[in-house]
Amino acid sequence: MKKFLKQFLYILADQKIMLLVLLAAVLGNAVIETLGIGLIGPFIAFASDPELVEKTIVIGQVYDWLNFESRERFIAFLALFIIIIFYVKSFLNFVIRRYIFNFVYQYQGKLRIRLLSAYMQMPYTFHLKNNSAFMIQSIMNHTVSFCNGILLELLNSFVSLTIITFLSILLIYTSPIATIVIGLILFVVFAIILRLKNTLSRWGKTIAQSQAEMIRVVNHSLGSVKETKVIGCESFFLDQLDTQAQLYSTSLSDFMSFNQIPRITIEAMIMTFILGFISVSILTNQDFQGLISTLGIFAVVSIRLMPLATQLSKGLSVLRSSTFVLEKLYHDLKELENHQALIAPSADVAAQFKPANGSLEPSHLDFEQEILLDKISFQYEGAKNPSLNQIQLRIKKGESIALIGKSGAGKTTLVDVLLGLLTPTGGDIKVDDQSVYQDLRAWQNLLGYIPQSIFLIDDTLERNIALGVPDHLIDETRLNRAIELAQLSELVKELPDGVNTNLGERGANLSGGQRQRVGIARALYHEREILVLDEATSALDNETEALVSEAIRSLSDSKTMIIIAHRLTTVEHCNCIHLMKNGQIIQSGTYEEVVLAANEE
Image (tube, rainbow, N blue to C red; front, side):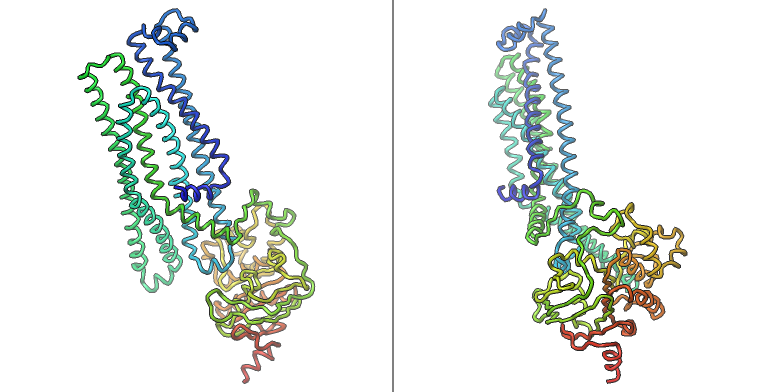
């Protein structure tokens, strides 16, 4: 229990005051409900024998103080008072329940933002090692399980437990023996739940894990739909999904079936108790008036206790089954916190952008002369040898340089270090003698990245080019200039809705060359001074490559360009070519000195 509370309060750390307010309201509502039910017994007794009004000390004093004309009128007033109490209780109960739902589901959204923000702030190496399906599982499913299965159930259980406690005190005052019997009934039910706690936890873990696996399988099958159709391996993915779906459905049906047992058991045992209590009272010739009063209270309490006890037992079951999700979320958030990545998301997304021109907000880094890679080294965790070894490289402003070499030479790793995605294990990157690691974000705001496979969102051309900028901040002048420089003007004319045409998932409505040029336009829209092209034309045919290369060459006079190339014809225009091997630059020079000379040899 101590571990559970520690993990729960850690996840809910910023909501403690809201919880305290809620708990205080629940206590107040429980007191009012107990008062209303507690008055039902005396009311029934007074209605059956009005003379008891004056014989009861406290009620008699109230009767005298209010100066009613008759006992009957006082009894009617008492009925009205009880009705008002129940209406007040019902209204408060509605307000509290609404507050609970509002609190839980708003926090669900906040928790999703917290997780996504944290994942996006994690080092690039974290994303290389972790499957995105499990991150999606945490953001979309685990947050729901935590809020519905733990937070909501815990709050509902507290409401139920509070009311049960106050009603139990009332029952003890009314009939101690009967209360002990009801207590034993509830004890048996909750003992069964506790006895099966490991089974409940196992079901919950299986449900969560099978959900994650189903997301992974669906991602793989839909993400590789072209290859899947050609190979004809649809059944491979369907069989995997079927296996996980069977595990999910079996565990969930077992869990939901178990949840019905407490309600059925409680109803049967309480009805047995009430009928048995009446029979014993009649056989032992107990006072009839007292019996009616006691039965009145027990009847109303039973009506309230049965759903409350059922809800409480269901809540305990759900809590037990959700402990795996709690531990997973706690572990994830702790790990993210340890990486110092938990940065609170801005309440105003638009505030992250400069209102004047629609560019990403950030600190500025002056780039007037050169970029220096000063003895850069990098070694992946667990690797025997470094991927980069003492790289020394100068890039003048306005230059176009190319990195060439065989696969595994270290080209992409060097680009990832340049992009600030990987932190070098040795050396430094300097811009005009200033280390970029003093303000990495400012350095990244100089960079435009155009990979081999451009990521396009399922949205319009305009939003794909101005990716990350809210609609009302998109600068039309810059957008049109980027389209023209990237040689997309003809495409825009052909599209049915121009820049407002939806490109489809991953740009399905565009050709490979058009997708690459959208990537170039994106980098140009954000007015990045340095363009990094990571084999941006290697997957294109010769004709399309020529068009994209022409667009790239047209920018070479105005931008500093760093190009990784597989096809060496695409780097003829570069000022300097650097040949890499085993994480080192082994030769530098012009295209003729490096590429043509190597071909002649």
